[in-house]
Amino acid sequence: MIATFTPCKLHGTIDAPPSKSMAHRYLIGAALSGEICTLHGVDYSEDILASIDCLKALGAKITTNESTVTVDPRRFMQVDPDVLVCRESGSTLRFFIPLALCLGKPVTLKGSKRLFERPLSVYEDLCNGKGFTFDKAADSVTVCGKLESGNYELRGDISSQFITGLIFALLYSGADSVIRITPPFESRSYIELTISALQSFGADVAFTDEYTVKIKRSQLHSYSGKIEGDYSNAAFLDAFNRIGSDITINNLNSESLQGDRVFKEYFDRISADSPTLDISDCPDLGPILFALAAMKNGAVFTGTDRLKAKESDRGAAMHQELSKLGGGLIFGDNTVIVPKQNLRYTDLPVSGHNDHRIVMAMSVILSKIGGTIVGAEAIKKSYPGFFEDIKKLGATVEIK
Image (cartoon, rainbow, N blue to C red):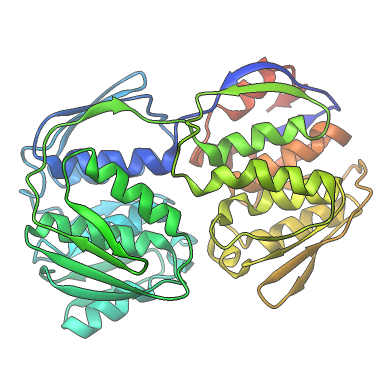
């Protein structure tokens, strides 16, 4: 897919798309509940479809109707799948490896090669320590073990997805467990999202102190509700406002636990000054923060190392594409410096790097200066309606 922009300003009102992070968690929570649940406001991005496919493979019966998903989990974990297909979803892969380890038989999780270039060492170490199978190939991993309740320790400076995945599995195991997280603890907000979602189903899961999660044996129950709006994707919409557009964004919960809600504060600081901002708790905001800083006053970002292990190496990808427009980034130790720069139209197309967030960040820039994105189909991973939504708001973008 090729997206070609001419300079434009956007106007109007739009609902933020449903939170992908929350949808993953509620879908898995529904499967663990043992009772039929209905979730409204689900956006069928590639990542969410991957989790739905894995839940089906594990025995859950799932029906979809427009943006509504009904989960009948009465046979969940009562079948023996040989393969779980995770597509390109890091969340799906890391959430389902521990569940697969509860089955006591070999299960292969498959996906794109880039997905399996992303770190899995936390689970590999866990499996090695317990004598479980963990055989990793270029586009798959095969695991086999019988994960049981107990006390576990995980590093806090890794992706929170590992901790969330273990919480799911330990809740399924049916007895009390404890996860101790060694500091520094990054992306804590995502663990709080997991706990909040599971508590909706009656799970007795909570932090007992800053670094300890207690998972108690719980009698889960049915839950039906609406998935809240996504602050991660709303950030890309609001970024248009910071360069001259006038968009009102609805469907955002002001009391949300989503860590990416910090984007509004960070956008304000970038617009007013040349701040130093820590993004260790909100790495998905990296590309749009870099883009906005480049068009505003510049900024320094710390906590950036985890950007290397996303759908692309997001720092390197943004540097490569900004360089085509007369800009670029400067890299330090766990730091990215974005100088103030005069970005300008060139006839060189920019690349989406098979990364949805790079595509959206470059879309914001090109709405100001014009230009073309190749590989824009990566948007389907998290926000498949992005281009249609911004066109409704007046974006002059041609899609081929």
